Image (cartoon, rainbow, N blue to C red; front, top):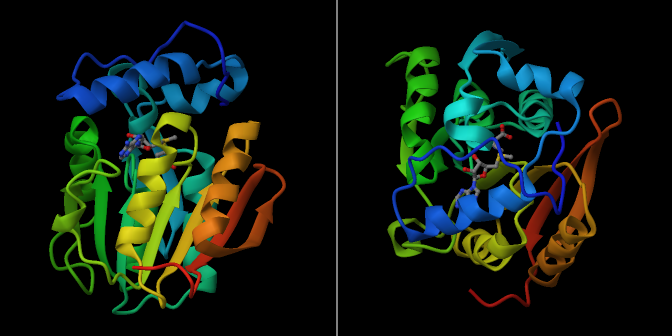
Length: 243
Ligand SMILES: C[S@@+](CC[C@H](N)C(=O)[O-])C[C@H]1O[C@@H](n2cnc3c(N)ncnc32)[C@H](O)[C@@H]1O
């Protein structure tokens, strides 16, 4: 599925928004998210999808009609999960996932031995929690998985500034959130932190975010999945970026 820029129809108004920022974001979704290809759309309407990652079968419950974009698995999450599985040693590393949706990527990190905090907006936390709890049973990962609310740019003082990895899949898509997202990435990072972003570049605005990112971080494309048209970017804070 793709996003379409200027249409007015939306299928993701959950009616479960909890505060002004969620409402503002969901209005942005109304402008940004329109499925226009029924064939590509179909996986999003499945109630359940299975993924083989990190030596496990992960079973993800989706609920597009209730929660929209936050309650389905996006290709970027799968590509980032595959990258974590094969290219990164995560044992005992601290990882925070932003805009986790169903939490697939964060779960892969946890299964790879990382100490993971999976974050989302308040409105999508219950669905996220259900998926994580049904896949990661207590005591089955090296570290327990934490699930927390994190709306970009808000209450950042509640989060440490020293994660070893900050990860996010398909979180670059609402122009109105770009400043807050960047602020969040900077807050969560120190000069050693590796930021890994799985991205579908759909519009010029997405490229504009990458330019904003490059002002604060050294950014390198480390993978391009041609079949799914997903790019993975690895970023580290520039030494001239003040913390
Ligand atoms: C396209 S979905 C990607 C979900 C998941 N990472 C995946 O790839 O399957 C974008 C996610 O970003 C989250 N999001 C959007 N705006 C946000 C904000 N201001 N703060 C935190 N999360 C946000 C949404 O709730 C949604 O889960």
